[in-house]
Image 1 (cartoon, rainbow, N blue to C red):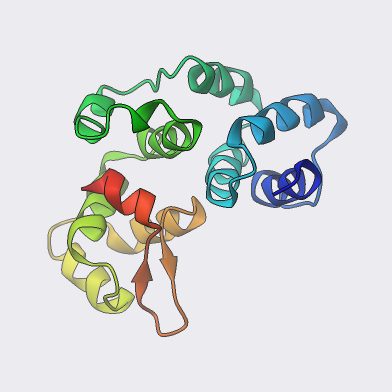
Image 2 (cartoon, rainbow, N blue to C red):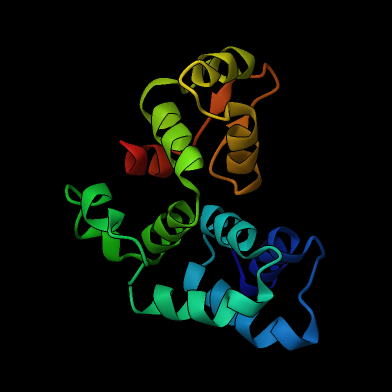
Length: 165
């Protein structure tokens, strides 16, 4: 995807507008460049940064230095160590790291067992495990880590699913 369309896609997810504010334009371009025109990365990073303008500079430094703040990185990427150094993997990993414990458990459960299953049924099932499934699933959708198709089935990009396994 070219730089102009990438910035627009990123902006829709980060600001809910087609372009960033003047104050965040330079940092937004840096984020877009880091994503390399990959739509999934643009959506996930934009959603992660939504309403977190004050944290942007620190997040970008973490991405550039390949240092997500959570020790989970070793577990998630032990089988794909080389892939963990790619920008897309860093973005997806950072988005995971910023989930709370409830959301992480739900993400992992869905990635491993519940893709293409009915959202309502899975919400009830996960709630039985003492998880706040409705809120957690909604957060995962907002962060673009999970999608719901027209038949109310849960969907997840293959890279996200692989990360969750």
